[in-house]
Image (cartoon, rainbow, N blue to C red; front, side, top):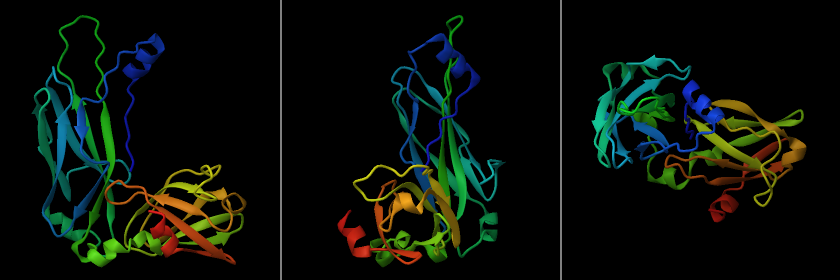
Length: 253
């Protein structure tokens, strides 16, 4: 989950000048990630103009995994809208017919972008800042939308670790992306040195930054679920392989 505020050159200049009266983002989004249910035609997001004095424009668009703007197979409607001071609205991510060409046995990741555009200032020599929010958008085909039992037993519990040299490899055998935001030796310890958040793609493996020595034989990983929550997975290792201790992980929630 991943929230990205873009910093413009004007913002950097303002920091150097010591200007402290920045406003927080005026246009707020109601979530930190989007999961597009492939059995539906669209998903609606709630946005709010948190500025109670000025109207703002809200501009939305989607990027692919490489950061390129796209207009298919998903599109944002409306691409630009005006929000009056303190008012709420909705923005929709709509599926186009081309969505049927996406892989139907695993998720596809995109990025949803929302930029606020402030009204033109009437004051001379004024500094205006436009903040941008960027979050992950997962297209989840209807064939893999989890049922009640799968939601009760999260697929992230299927992750395994295997030792390769001085590091653990995270194996994701599921058709879903898994975002890991923390790794430590035990829950009571601090985040392990050299850890960096990573997103493990469906049916692939990724290497954890911390060494095996730093994580020990009972590593604890934290992931981000569909709702922005941060559950933990407690692993038990035997030899070069580690599996999730499901009972301990569930008791830890």
